[in-house]
Length: 449
Image (tube, rainbow, N blue to C red; front, side, top):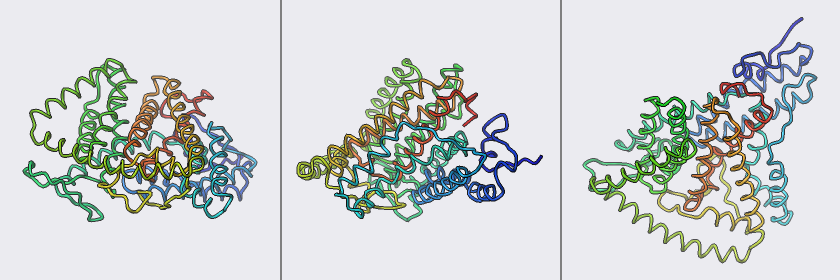
């Protein structure tokens, strides 16, 4: 009797201590088996490229993601017509959103297909949320991607430190910091991205994973790995060199939020320690004080510009209260949602921008979606046992990213920022996959999935 192993079975066998779904050759069918190997072989490599793209470039991340979804969908369709099925249908709890959003956009566009197509492409991340979880079920390996984000983020931070002094950027774009208080020429670091803001938003998310691992290890074992402490300091310092008060605040929260969930004692100590560190640095280190005051003044200037923009938006909102103006600036495979975005002129309230675009009805729909994502995150944090440390790290780190994302939305159009949105939706897809697995009680350890 002959047996075969499909690409999905190979991927699942690496994440499970016993063989998964191995069956007889005639159960797959010769032609279907060939198709599965064609469609399935590149998928693990594309998953690797997606999370590598998170650290390097939006083009790499989004292009790899769409190719992954295409091949994964073809694999799922081939599996559906096979006699021996590997995949299965499970419900994410977001089905209402998958139905409501397209219907709302179609109605808001007056049932005109071209404006509707433009709106759907603008919110194209919804397809990632629909298709990625069942692909993750067939091709698991979450821990590998988490390690890639953590150690790749460390490498990105180290590169950022070098960039701060030499100012080199792949696109030859430099962001000089004009402070006479430095005895050297400094640059606001942006990694491989177009803007230091994107660099800072990605790195603060990765910092939340590192600090979560640091604190959980300290809580469970009474001591922590020196490596994670050094990594936390290196990544936090790289966030500091973005020279943006918004990123500085998110950096602090990326440490305090894991402290709050790990231990209230750690949270109190963390708050007191950070306040003391800031107070002493402000009064004892003159370059830090001058930089902070300069950034505060720049922040206030941007706030005044933001209020001017918002006053214009309020008039548009009043004229299109319920359905919004339905104007979307479509950019594919790029970092920003608008080609005019730069670090210097971005300060907009993302909630008001969303209200302007989709009106009160669409705004309520998106807020309900974000609340559902937050509740899923909190429930998983409660359901996952403490023995599954790495899964806890991923879930709590994602929760930190959600909180930071919503706070950043007060002063930054983050809901319309392609790179951050696709990163968030990819992590949310992992949570949906986790929710299905833990709901069925089939997770023996945190090396699975």
